[in-house]
Amino acid sequence: MISGCSGGGKSTLLAELSNRGYAVVDEPGRRIVNEELAAGGTALPWVDLAAFLRRAIDAALADRASAAAHEGWVFFDRGLVDAESALEALTGEPISRSLCMTNRYHHRAFMAPPWPEIYVRDADRRHGLDAAKAEYDRLMRAFPALGYDVISLPRSTVSARADFVLACLGNALPSG
Image 1 (cartoon, helix red, strand yellow):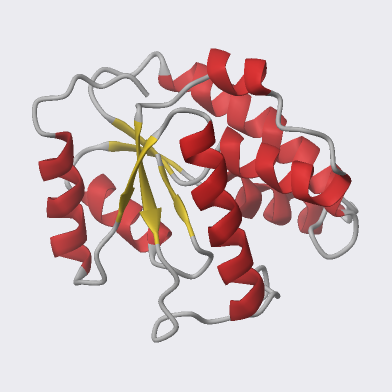
Image 2: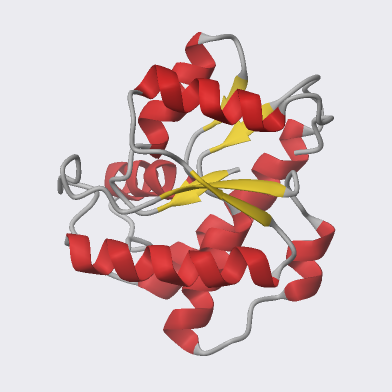
């Protein structure tokens, strides 16, 4: 699981892991935004955030189930914990611990810290760096509370970051 701050280089890191032959799962949120914009839908973070997050939870569950068919490492760009913790922050509904514990990723979660030098807004990322930092802080509480071993990604080249992730996994067996 690769999570952390928006605009912190997660997708770029996952593209590098994919180029190295590893299976990757694209971020649910970006996929949902593309689908909703194409269909004229409203489950968008800037229109109906709760509906967007509920779709992200469903997508993360489907992604997790689909990944079971792959052999070896499968790297996720965000997932269930991200969406569940965001929904909790929005609505006050507590994270569904049973859902998150039943659908666990590998026990090591890699977190991209805030990196102002590379942060950019785009058509799908309309929030600023302060909101991204708040998101990061929320995730840094949520993952350990669910029993994940959180490892902060270094601010370095994409290649060095990928090397770091693979070195941290070492001989650990893939489990999501």
